[in-house]
Length: 238
Image 1 (cartoon, rainbow, N blue to C red):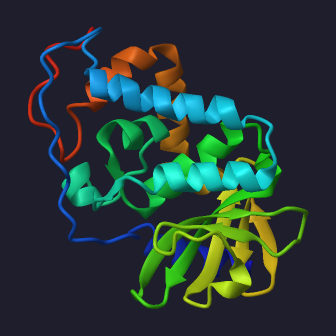
Image 2 (cartoon, one colour):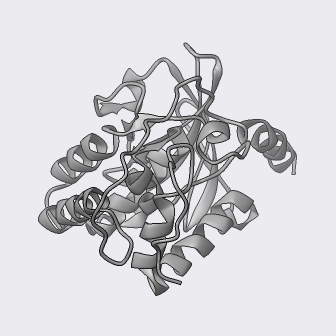
């Protein structure tokens, strides 16, 4: 009971993670549209899908490097600038189309890129940490080669994939995936419950299901969402 109470206090604090003063990159209008999608947007989404296809069921080290490098190319932008919300968890498509996100968006995009490559969910967690150098909450992806193994960390602050023991600048707090929620410490991880209590996680699942029904329409709309939009979505299909 005490662990759950402590977790709820920590969760309330950490849901305001990832601050930045970075400004979004502005996109350039395109003259040619197909289903309202700009050619450069379509090319970027296809590059992501090609990355997934080429690395599907490849060795874990190759998948981890491919996902980490691809997502880390995008700009870091605070949610207040990018989505006009205090805290928003973007889908991978939203991050890729807008070419920007904060630490949570980067981690989520890497997580789903890896699962679509065929990596088992049981080997991956989204981990909230305290970034000690920045003195703020931060999210990374943790990869476990085996159960209870020391995880490797995929991050946008330090772009090297390193064991958690080599990231003395990160203090683990809690982690989660589709199967559960854990309270983390330096060398231990205690299962608490399922991840349904995380409302932003549940909202993200809903948007992912919606995208599956009409991906092209959502990709088109995302071009005009967030802080890098220059025009309205009049060219997008209904």
